[in-house]
Image (cartoon, rainbow, N blue to C red; front, side, top):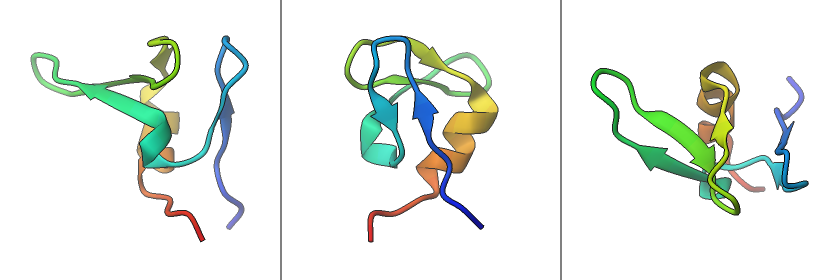
Length: 54
């Protein structure tokens, strides 16, 4: 399975949990780009947060 990456609107490539910031919402947490704070789609964030740098 190939690693999941997401390119944020600020140009940052998000690939690992360290690239995300978690914010607690009412029911489910929301994930945002660590660099600019732009929300990351939940399904993409869930895949990224389980990846570990080699």
